[in-house]
Image (cartoon, rainbow, N blue to C red; front, side):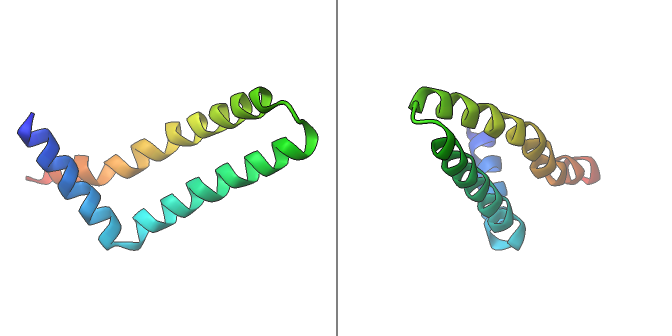
Length: 79
């Protein structure tokens, strides 16, 4: 378990030392903000807005997580 935590910590540090971590974080926060703003302009029911927001964020994570882990897999294959 120590190795997984150390590897995760190293990857997070490397993401935020390069612009890619900030770009992904900005896209995530921006996408979520737009979804909530759009949801509350059309509906006042918070449950509907949350369900819609979580489904879109889940779809975004489905594509973002493999994109972020490609560098880790390439490093493991290279070494």
